[in-house]
Image (cartoon, rainbow, N blue to C red):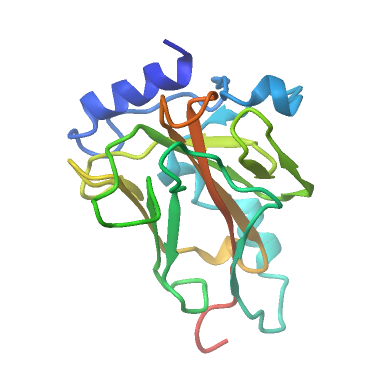
Length: 221
């Protein structure tokens, strides 16, 4: 079993613990299933979602220098090719369509398959996240999917009801519930869900479209 699957299995087994009980050092590299085909020279690092999404004092100090109001935006990006699952359904994404702002909760929902009937399967999944998109989308021939963001970091969903990145027990639904702090104003968070789906194609994985969250100023500024 590959490292991502081992960690995902650990997350499923321990996910019922309180948030923070399952932590990994940020230096731990992750072997993604498409790493060789994508020609990745650096492995992404496994991070705790709660800790990663908290800005640093330096980032907050730099953000304080922004005096003009910043308008936030949500953008879904599709690649030139979609995955090629045997049953014809790719992972889906359903953002909450309101302007992402500092101090306002953002809720994003991914499903292991875009169709909700029948319910999406309980396939293992991880979220790759980045602070930048790829200059050009990278189609992956083995799966037909497109890598759309720079795979810098990996987050694992948790079964904890208080988790920032949460997995609903018994369902193929993953949600991000995040309130950006002041250090995120004027910055983008990119994400793309990877679903391990043996038998759906020769590569054994599927990928969602990419999502960009561009964080605007707090309300009233």
